[in-house]
Image: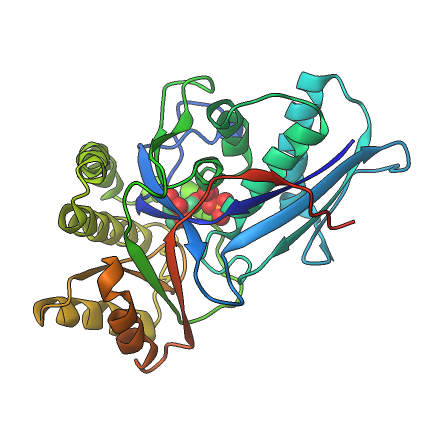
Length: 335
Ligand code: DP6
C-alpha cells in the first residue's frame, strides 16, 4: 500500500485570510470564496512542486512524516495526521504510515509550500488506500490540513466555494492550464521560514476592523475575477488581484497582534511594478503571507519583466511561472 504523487503550488488572486467562527475551527471553513492559479515553475531548478510518497505498512509502529528529510512534529504532524486519519477511516485501513516529501522550492516562506505539500499528500494517500476520489471531494479533506492546498488539486484556474458546511466548502476548476496563458515573475526577497504562520493569521484576521469590508468585497471580486478568467481578460484579472492583495495586507497590518509581512524590498518591487505599468509594460503585483512578490504579466512580456525585476535591489532571484497541472499520481517513489 504505497503510492506517490506530485502537486504544484498556487498563487491566490482572491485571498483566503480568516476562517469562519460559525463552524468548528477544525473544518477551516474560509470567510470568503477564493480564486487561484496553480503554478508550474519554468526554471531549471524550480518547478514549484512537491513530490510525496506514502506507505501504509505493518512495519510502521507509529505514524511518521518527513519533509525535506526533517521529521514533522507538533502542529505540522497534527495537520498531516488529521488528513490521513480521515482517509484511513473512509478506507477502513488501520495501518500506520510513513510519509516522505520533497519540495523543489523554499519551504514556508509565503510561497505556499503547504499548498503543494498537502495536495500531494492527499492525492498519494488516497491512491495508496485505494480510494477513488475526484479532486472536488478530496479538496474537502485537504481543506482541513490547509485551505489553500485544496486549490492545488486542480490544474489551471481554481475557485474555492466557502460554502456553509464541511460538505459544501470545496475547490472546483474554472478552466485548465492550457485555456488561458498568463505568467508570474516571482521576486524572491527572503526565502527563510516565515515567523508567523497563516494558521495564526487566520485567527487574528477577525480582530481587524477592516476585515468585514475585505470579506464583503472579496465575495464580489471572486465573482468578477471568475468572469475575467473565463473571458481571458488579463487586465481585469490583474487589477482585481492587486486590489484584493492590498485589502488582505491592510487587514494583516491592522490586526491584533499586527502582522507586517512586507520588507522594505517588498515595497520597492511593488512601486517598480506600478512604474513599469505606467511606462507601458502591463503588470500587476500580488503577495501572500510573506515578503515575496508575484508579478503577473502576459506571456510575451515575461522575459522583459523578468529582466527588470531581477535587477532590482533586494531581489535575491526570480522564479518564472505559468499555469500548472493539478495533483497527479506518479511512479517516482521517494523510498
Ligand atoms: C495568504 O492556511 O492555506 O496564502 O498555512 O500555508 O496552509 P498554510 O496557508 P493557508 O492560508 C493561505 C493564506 C494565503 C492566501 C491564500 O493562499 O489564499
